[in-house]
Image (cartoon, rainbow, N blue to C red; front, side, top):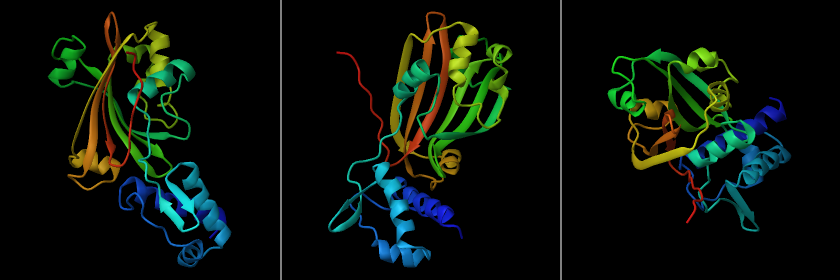
Length: 240
């Protein structure tokens, strides 16, 4: 097996164990020589794999060995994503990718229709996707948009790779609207079957679930429901 492919597999393997909590903070990894023997590769390939995890601040090294970092890895908050939309027209942070699993016009739940001040029976755009880094899934989300937006931005109904990142910026440009109000609601709970499947977790695993509203004086522009697996931290600054 090519060294480059094995290096990626080693990185992905330990990234997943760390982010899911299977390797807790402070856990000691095997030595580079032991890992090289286990994976059947050169020690240099192991060093390359671990250096990537160190760049991502998932592990730390010392004369005593290599350990899982004590601090919980951070991920983008809704506030971070909104700042990215405004500054770079991108929705996701550098290195993150997403897979859209659904993009269609549907009848929304009553509470979603009420948020957009729609008549019950009006359709909306519903987009469902999973985002993460490499093969590790760090976000499961469902975004809602008013149906007329799909006429102005046909990509809202596309699941094609590459069209999800920057979609909010394209909606704002096409509708000539500007996000001036934002609200996040978050709570910790157990993952249901759909969320667990999307994030690669066991049903009932702890997650952080949230709902985000972005809007302006004319109403809600985008409503999102999302969840993160355990061992991820989000944070943002606010004015005082």
